[in-house]
Length: 96
Image 1: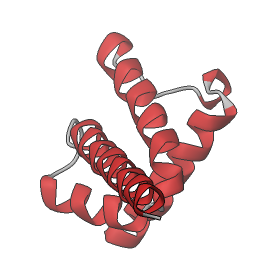
Image 2: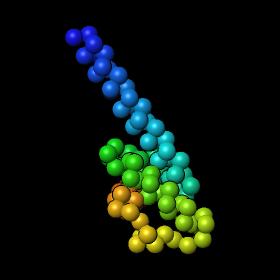
Image 3: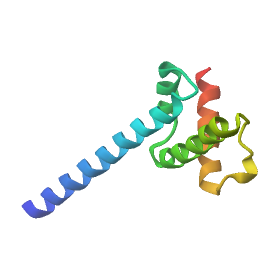
Image 4: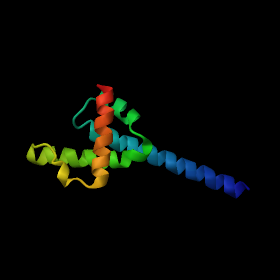
């Protein structure tokens, strides 16, 4: 029983650290174009299961703007990146 409890605690801690790491990565990508206050609001509105996709989408968007100076062409996004950017845009609209 103790082994089972220890395994459960280890799993919860791993998932917690993973979620915190994603929030940090999301904040980093968000702050390329927004204030910390806005990014904190956006992060709070994006469900944990969508954060990985939001990071992918924001990275792709940030790379596009930094390389070409042009906005991202949505047809160049994978389905995961598109889902992530949709989540960010919806959260951003709420936070404005």
